[in-house]
Amino acid sequence: MKEIGVAIMGAGAVSREHAKAYLKNPHTRIIGVCSRREESAKRLVEELGLECALYPNYEALLSDDRVDAVSICMPNYLHARLATQAARARKHIVLEKPAGIQLDEVRGLRESVREAGVLSIVSFVFRWNPMVQTIRTLLDQGAIGEIVYAECDFWHGIKPTFPSYEWIRRREFAGGAFITGGCHVVDLIRYCAGEVVEVSARSIRRRPDFDYPTTLVATLKFSSGAIGKVGCSLEAQCPFTIGVHLLGTEGTIRDNRLYSKRLLPGQTDFATIPTIVPSSGDVRYHPFTAEIDHFVECVLDGRQPTPNIEDACKTQEVCLAAELSAQRDGETVRIEA
Image 1 (cartoon, rainbow, N blue to C red):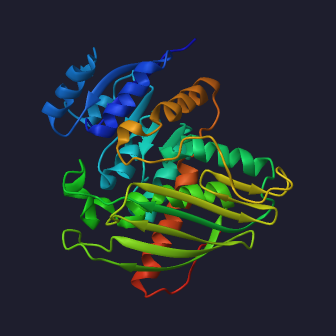
Image 2 (image 1 turned 180 degrees about the horizontal axis):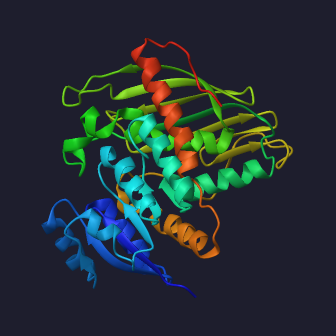
Image 3 (image 1 turned 90 degrees about the vertical axis):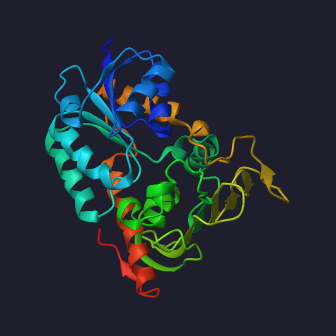
């Protein structure tokens, strides 16, 4: 079976997890690593015992014919630019979330991917969390009927010790709370409840070390007619939390708890689902291996991974609509189909 040659852009904590996932996959070989800081790339290669190239720049990486796919694990403001260059070089793409900061650059990336005919996946990695996968299976089984209300929250207090702290607290590099963190739950609510057509949001900032509002909440209207809410806080004083609450015509899901008239007739209280909830902001405990395995399988089979850049563009539209609405004191922003 074909071996896929991969190269990694970046040498931080997330890059390390991508590399470890590739090392576990029998169909991938790490060809090389490139970082803005050469010493970081050398350290990553030494720590993982990699036998691969250390590229002097990203152009050298993309011009290497041995490289079939790239993982882009850089600060947010570089994502769309580097991914567009990768698409034009005919490389398949694993892109860390978000797909970019501005909507026009993400749409431009989408067009470049379409024109090049390459495959892409954007790392909304919580889709591979066992709790989320269980929820998606229950929805497919009709466990709660038609969704009438959906709610997802991302609570992650970013401390100065956080690896990306220095750039994540600046809007020009991070994009804002929904772009850098809340995008995870915007993706999840779309994954569970469908497409969003209207957004109204409010925000607040209580952290002087960030130059943008760090807590945001947005109410949503879906194309199905359902309503919902997504919340994001980068200043939350609580354990890392991703919450998924779904109310349907036949039952309700609250994270790892299920009430279903259809599947569990006679039920009088929520039943706990034996699964693993997302409970850590540490990327060492995020399901990158499952994501990378899915991507590799899709490349080998020639089929589209999910969520790809098409998905990510829709998530970006919702995130930016929320940021815009919050700046306009809650004005409703409509998302065009």
